[in-house]
Length: 142
Image (cartoon, rainbow, N blue to C red):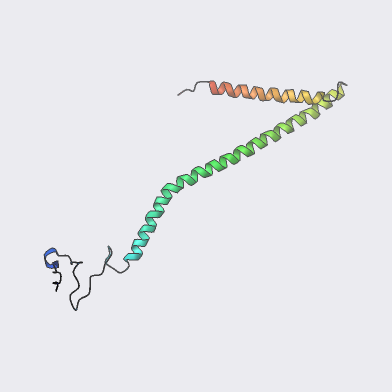
């Protein structure tokens, strides 16, 4: 018959977890850092806290970048739409005003006010583009 495992806890100061419990004693129970029975809850809280910190550090910047991308795209679409509508409004308003002015001096013919208005808006857009190009090409001072 096999001999029972020897209890070496008197030499190491630690209970021998591999040895069977002695008759009349209970097996040692695992305990957490505080030694109480609440160690599973503490371990779960620690895991939740660590996972939350990792999530905040990884997904936080990704969410911020995604929001910036979405709002930037929305601003670009709305800005382009507004620019087109303002250009249409400007051409239409100038066309009506020029047609009225040409009618006063009896030079109005169909379409004449429209092409003059389009030429004026085109000249304004070209001038704005040339100014922006010059400013972009200018070396910056430190």
